[in-house]
Image (cartoon, rainbow, N blue to C red):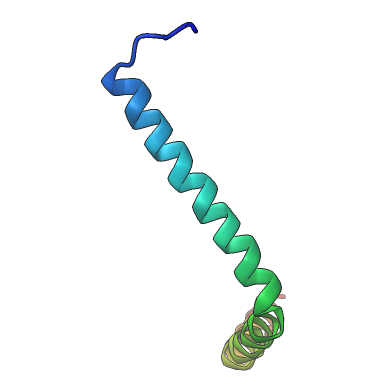
Length: 72
């Protein structure tokens, strides 16, 4: 058997790669398991942002149209 030299850096790399792999696996499992909840939460938040920003956009478009009409 051939044994390589174990350094602190290789131990740290293995530790970090193990945690990244475990975290990635947990993300995939939770996305599959809770996909309906994630989709619902995302859509509800998206509609909340649209409802919050729509009056601001309408006001800004109105102000722009009024300024253009005055400057013509």
